[in-house]
Amino acid sequence: MELILKQDVQNLGFKDDTVTVKNGYGRNFLIPQGFAILATPSAKKVLAENLKQKAHKEQRLVDDANKIAEALNALEIKISAKAGGEKLFGSITNANIAEALASNGHSIDRKFISSGIVKRTGKYSANVRLHRDVIVELAYEVIADKA
Image (cartoon, rainbow, N blue to C red; front, top):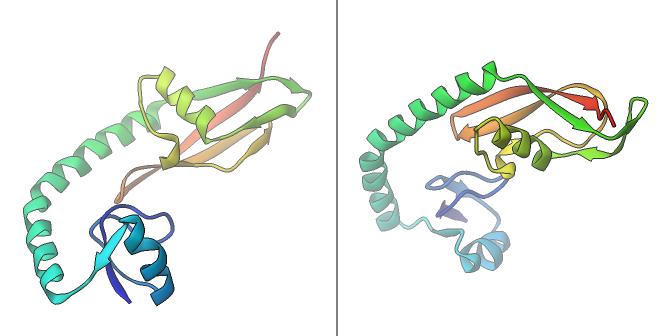
């Protein structure tokens, strides 16, 4: 079944992508939830016209994302957490990284950050998706909290 995505779907595609999925997934989940529409010939023509009009706006968004990427690469992020030796009491997740970025003046939603769960002190990296074409590898360090 060929569908046109109306919004980003995790592990499937981005808005306005044409994807092929199994019939049940499309009929029972994507279409009823409003995530996709059927890719009929008329819908494809409308999509092509919309994409043509969005091309200029898209380029400006990519340029803005690249500026933010340069700023993120210049940042040195240290996240402090309670620890016993090297092992943390708890863990560091995407939400903690988003908070650290917000404290440095960059408001990025945690769902665009993928790092995994960190349970020890040390240096790590996370991928931050600023745009579908701009993904930044952000280096950060987890340090023990000085109480």
